[in-house]
Image (cartoon, rainbow, N blue to C red; front, side, top):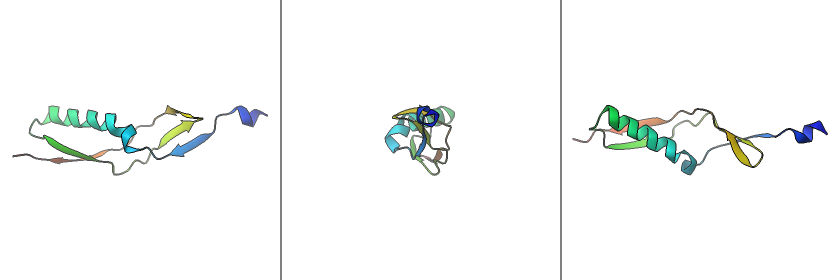
Length: 74
């Protein structure tokens, strides 16, 4: 009985749409650091810490690694 009540941890690889707000933040921070970096193409290299789904909704999002390859615009 008790096992049924506990939410099940299901590891899910996050979709790019879920990460877009995070990537936009990363990009804006980079532009603050170096305004010449206009074209920043963030590449999700290793989304190792996956989203943890507790039941139907996302409850816990662990910090994740986003590798950004900045392109210097002359």
